[in-house]
Image (tube, rainbow, N blue to C red):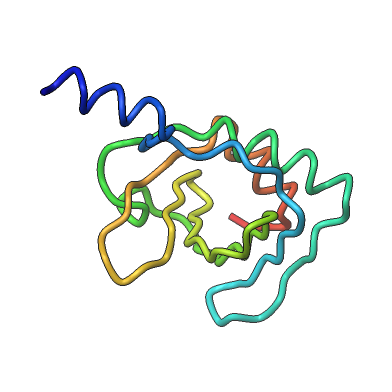
Length: 117
């Protein structure tokens, strides 16, 4: 039974890891929901590479501190809003608890999105 379930999960591609979906557009909003930046096409490509390299971390996004921003990330299947802290932590904004991820290089990511630490 476990083997069958594992096979079905593998076939469906179900995973807790971030999905490798191209980033079409990114809008950055500050804590007061004021637009900070809209990424260009070239910046979206860089953002996409950094975004796919993020890794799941323990704790919540706000535990690490720093200023927070909202990232509206649009892919081919729609847009999702994430809460991002300049410490490099990010989580999907949702009604239920979501996993927290960390970007590999917070300083480079902050420069790219126009975030002030």
